[in-house]
Length: 485
Image (cartoon, rainbow, N blue to C red; front, side, top):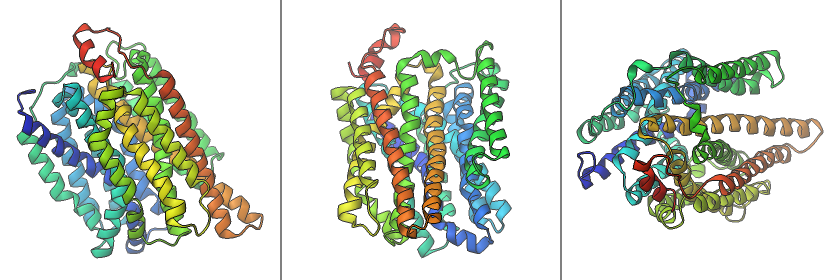
C-alpha cells in the first residue's frame, strides 16, 4: 500500500495521469498539421495564423511556475482536476470555433489549463511512487509521454484532419478529458496541501508570470516584427526588468513563490539548465525535420508522421522499461549524458542531409539516434530536477522543470527558426537555388540544436551528482538511492 492505494490501482492511476498529460503534449503539435485547413476555413492571413500556435504557448509557458506553486498551496489533485476541466472546456470551444478571435482566445485558455496540469502531474507521480524502482519506472512512462507525444501529435493530426476536419483535433479531447477527470476522482487520494495557502506570494506570481509571457511574446513576435525592431527590444527589456524585480521580491519575502535556495541544490540547478538546452534541441529536431521532409522530400502530413515512427518506438522501449533499468543500475548522470550525446550526434547527421535525400540514408539514422537519446535522457532529467527538494516544494520543482522545458523549447525553436529563415533569405537574395537555400537554413538550425545538446551533455556529465548529501536525514536514504548511489 502507498498513500492508501493498492499496487494495481497505483499503476492505473499513473495511466490516467499520463493520459491527461498526453492531451496537453499533443496539443503543442497536433494543430500544426491542421493549420492550412484552419487558415482556409476561418480566413486567417499568414501573419495572424501563427497566433493559433503562439496563443497556446504564451499562456502555457507563462503560467507553469504559478501552477506548480498553486498545487502546493491548494492540493495537487484539486489543481489537476481544475486544469483538466479548463483544458477540456477550452478544447470544446476550439472545436466549435467559427471565428478567428474565438479560436485564438480558446487556445490561450487551453494553454492555461495545460500549464496547471503539467505543473502538478510530476508531483502527483512522485507522491504515488516512493520506492526507487517503482518511481524510476513511473517516470519512464511519464518521460515517454512527454518525449513521444509531440511526434504522435503529427501523425494523429494528419489522420484526423484528412479523415474528418480540423475541428476534430480539438473535439477528440472531450471524451479523453472526461475519462481522465473521472479516473482521477476514483483513483487518486485527495491529499492535503503541502504549504500554507495564506502565504501565496502575489507580487512574485504577477512579476514572474508577466515576465515569462512577455519574453515568449517578444520572441515569437520578433520573427514578424524583426529582432532589432524597437517593439521587440522594448518587450525584451521589460521582460528582463520584470525578471529582476521578481528576483528582488523573492530575496525579501518570507514565503517566496520560488525559494532561491532551491538553485543552490546542484542537481536542481543543473537539470533546469540542461532542460532548457535539451528542449531547444528536441524542438529543433522535431519541427525542422518535419519541414525538411515536407518541403524538400515532398512528404505528405501522414508520411511525416510515419517517418517519426521508428523514433517513437525506440522512445517507447526505453521510456517504458529500459531507461528505468539504466537509472537503477548506473544512477542519473551516466544515462542523462549518454542520451544527450546520442541526440547531438543525431542532429549533426540531420545537418548534412541533402536536398532530395533518401529516408533510409539521410533521415532514419538521425531518427534512430534521437529516439535513443530522448528515451534514455528524459527520465534522468526529470529525476534530477525533483531529487533534492523537500515534499512541500515538489509542486514548485515540477513547475520549474516544466517551465524550463517549455520556455527552452519555445524560445529555442523561435530563435533557431528565425536564424534559419534569415540564412535562407540571404542565400536566396545572393542568387542561390531556392531549395539549396532552404536546406542551408535547416542545416544551420540542426547544427545549433546539436551544439545545444552537446553543451547540455557537458553540463550534465560535469555537474549532476550521483550522491545526495544528507541535508534532510529523513529523506537521505530515499533520494540518494534515486540519485544513483
